Length: 151
Image (cartoon, rainbow, N blue to C red; front, side, top):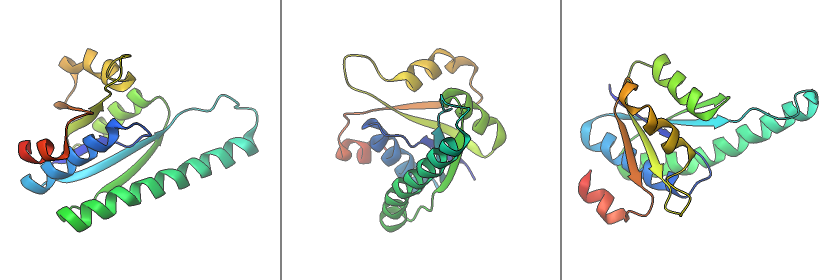
C-alpha cells in the first residue's frame, strides 16, 4: 500500500499538508504516515533534563497527532500511523523514506510569509531531483475547498 508521508510540526502550513495527504490517501486507497521529529538538544550534559524534555516532547506530539488522527478516521476513514524520530529534520525525513519502502510520496506544507516556504521545503526541494520518491509541496494558504477539489 502506498503511504503518504507528511511531517507534523508546529507550523501553520502543516495543516494543509495533513489535509492533502489524508484526502489523497482516502481517494486512492493509500495510507498516511505522520512523521514528527524531535530536534537534537543543545544541553547534552544535562541527561535528566534531556530525558524529561524528550518525554514532554513525545507527549505533545502524541496529543497533536491524536487531533489529526481523529479527523482522518472520522471524516475520511484513514487510520494514520505515527512515527517519532530524533535528529535533524531533513536527515530524519530522508531516513524514514529509506527505511519504509511503502512510502510513495512526501507531502510538505509551504509557508506563506516573506521569509520563504520554510526550511524543510527549501532544503528538500534543492535535492528533489535525487529524492527516491515524489515530493508534493502544498501551499500553506490554499483553501480547504480548493484542496478538496484537487485531491
